[in-house]
Each structure stands twice: as structure tokens, then as C-alpha cells.
Length: 112
Image (cartoon, rainbow, N blue to C red):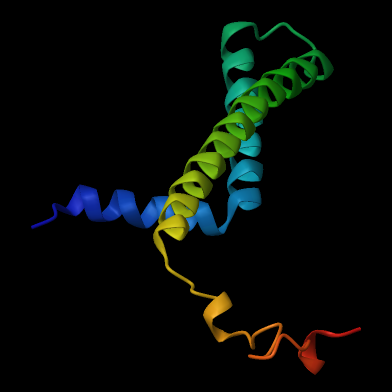
């Protein structure tokens, strides 16, 4: 039986997979807000423009880290799904008509 935290974690993970760009934008906005708040508390004498510049730089660094994580997650899920796809037996060629008939004549469907 799954615990409440495990269900919530899988729910959040599936939402993030569906809304990657919104997640990255939300992380960026949260990073800007947190950086401005931290800068305001730590050095109240700094100019607002300088706080915003530093906040933007911190948010950009965090966004690059999140984009790297999203790329790694995409690669991991794609690799996992392609491994499952290799196991499938499509048997595509069994449904095609033969290229030649019993006498060796070319099938009309395969001629140009």
C-alpha cells in the first residue's frame, strides 16, 4: 500500500512531466522572488536595480540547473521507453505481399 507522500510525489512528478515549461517558469519566478527577499534582508542599503540584477542572475543560474535536470529526465524516460519498444514484436514484414510470385515474376505492387 502506497503512503500518502508516495502518491503525492508521483502525482507531482506526472504534473511536472506534463507541464515542463510552466514548471521552469515557476521555478524562475520563485528564484527571483527569493533572491530579492534575501538581498533585501541581507543588504537593505543596496539599490533596487542592483537587487534585481543579482536576482535575475541567480534565477538564470537556477533555471539552467532546472533545464539540465529536465533534459536528464527527458533522456531517462526516453531511454526507458525505447528499451520497452525494442521488446515489442511488430512483425511488420509478415503483413506485406511477397515481392515475387512462385514463378519469380515481380509482383505489381512492388514495381515502379
